[in-house]
Length: 275
Image (cartoon, rainbow, N blue to C red; front, side):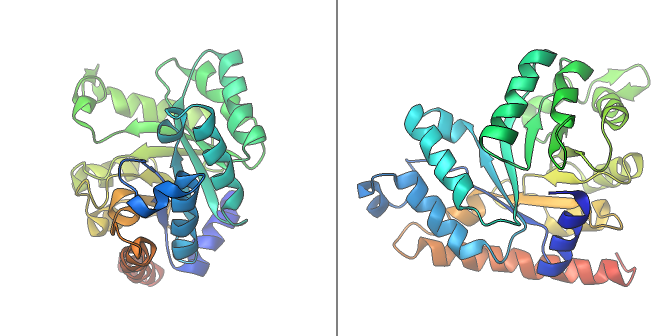
């Protein structure tokens, strides 16, 4: 999916919601455990309930890899079931020397046909660039995360700048707004989000941390939107585990709808220049 298609999708659905399919066998409703593939059965129901409300699905591969071949089979069934025209993210956080990164890119872009993959830039340019060589595919580079350990490196000064600022500036030299996004955590101070948007005016941000992690959708939208919206806001647990009975998908839809309606309001304000 190219940038204009993504922008058009956001406008059409009046949503920039990304639903995270971080499916944990220990958390899904018990009645699904009798299915041959309970993870896929859960994902299928969540997708059916939310596909008209979101513009993206993010699959955190760790929840699938831990189950070995069965997990990879569930992942493949899930990615094949997501309707065409919805943006897909492999949240795999890969990043290695160039020839290895090329193989990772082929895995997610060619074998599984994701639109994007999250990448860790610690090893530098040659660990990221292979992901940028695939037409109409995206690398989503870790920029500033909201976990406690972000203090260890990202928020340490490197000369006059924080290390995460150097990472963002380097990333903008490696990719373009048409093939590179940044992960920016939602639970950072909203004023910091605003400063990051000034530094990175055109790239899309994938923003995790809304819902269960306490990030404010209003703060994110007001501080980090750009002229194209420029946001994919991810909610995982708050949506997919909204209910744990046989009506779990309906409960997930209710929460997703609340996010979509709030997003539609902010998009309308953006359109008239009040946000």
